[in-house]
Image (cartoon, rainbow, N blue to C red; front, side):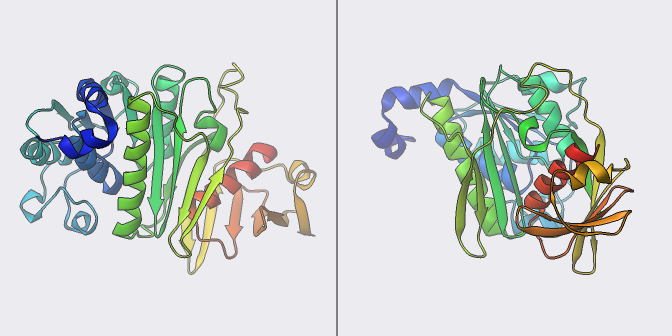
Length: 312
């Protein structure tokens, strides 16, 4: 029987419940392709959303594609592969970029965020808020994070409040090992949620360089959770200059407000040297933050969020 080993652990009733569930996966890159593969083999119906094509560089970590899929739409190529793995489940594929006009495509029992930009994640958060559970995941280099966004609990805005979007100046790179690990943990949490089991409440951060596994409590502190109108002001760009990472925004910063809220190591009028979360950062009133040694992109964006929220 197809699910006999899984049923031996979760039970036949739980398996029957999984077979009735549908998960929408937004993004079929390193995380989304691995997650789709695992969910397909677990007997969960899928909605696949991605507007990219398969490229040769994808094959290093996106395990459901082959050289024969190059230049094909990811959504269709994924559906073709996964249908051969499990013909018993229903799979819908959409070769589109998710936006406000088609956001209803993610109507499902659960949404997996496997995208690579904050704009789409905020869109998912706004649409799903207190209605549809969703799981935020991200991976870069040898690091990754996962956060369950569940009705009644802290939402995605509580992590990255007031940041509308950020782009990268270059591709920093990623190991296939961290992509597989984060996708596996994301699917594991998905199965808990689909089966009405207790899911992780904290944000999980993983660093494979030293094999650290941290749990971080996220409080309900954003405008959305407080019932206010969301006012996302900042569009960010993450850039690499040599070995240094810099975050830039389109808004000027109020340095006086920032000085009153963070540890100031040096004040040069239009430039500050701060210590935030044990990291030294340099910022100026034009909205540029330079991270002297920090390389963890997710941590960089968390710190940038804190500074911009204060200095807006």
